[in-house]
Image 1 (cartoon, rainbow, N blue to C red):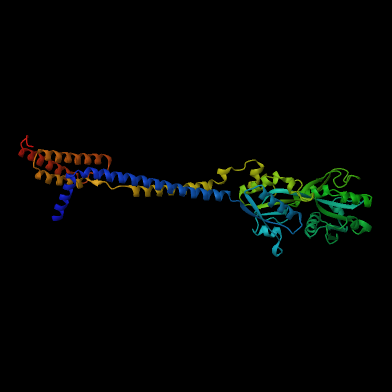
Image 2 (image 1 turned 90 degrees about the horizontal axis):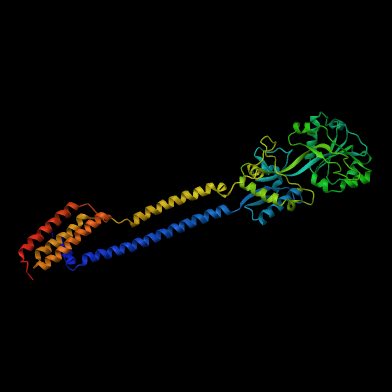
Length: 465
């Protein structure tokens, strides 16, 4: 009870000196300042977090992708092409970079690509291509040339039966393919001796004095067109014979990886003209392949740089002189990569299409941060409203002052303070700074104080000083 009386005396003293309203205003000003600082701090924090997220997302989106490419041995045209392509992607500031993977451990480009140890590789269509291989670009056509001495005769594939054949090649790949062709046409390989000879072996040496009846070679069109070797061969041997294959269309259907091709008149030699007219044959293609799970945009970017700088990718006028887009038909032998199909169809995805997943993620994270920030701001700035019943203490303090007043003037001062408290409570109930809890107690205290005020006025005469 003693503590209650001390509290009442303290409130009465504050009210008596006119400090109650001033203290309320002072606290309100402090609260508004603190609220502004909290809002500014929240805004700065949100801006910093948003900046970090956006910067990180942009860095992630702008960081170049890295694709690994399996390449052949040093000095091979395929490796030279890959090196030039890697340099071009860097010079053109493309969003893709190439990392070249050599033949460490003796693994070929096909082996590395088949084992998913490389994203890209240049492969020949007669190879055992893995199911995940997708065409990106046709780099070269290699035509089957069947060359014999001047005035030699040959009637189709069957005419090779029993003949001595030299196959140009630095590995057994060409010989294996020739054997497959012979088997299709029931040409007994055991009765038709084949021998692989180095590609740099002079043709006139192979055909001289009946060493071999025919020389078979798969030669790149680019190299045939740029080389003078066949002109020199014709000059040294007084001409030579080039034989076509009337079975070319049928061979294309029977042996996957072979394609029907045409050797244009005069392609090998201009004087004399060899061949004298367009001649049918078969050939294989060297294709830049990509795994089917490589991003579409990365492949489209590689094609954009490659087809925009084709002349810079040529290798010594013998490889990649006529780069072509792949066949995008659904029924093609080797399916085109989706990125290549987009590039060919000019349907390359835009920025928002390519990065829709990242943008959605950033927006989701931003939404979560915004919600957390709003919740934190609400929790930090929310002010618990005062209870109306708490103001009853102020009223009780004024009641004590009423009982101690000595004249009407003091009663007028107390009445003013009592009305100020009432206005504060009513205003607080309206703007939410005062809750209705304890409102009945406040009303009872206020009515009791009003009655005491009226009773006290009856004691003093109206002309009291």
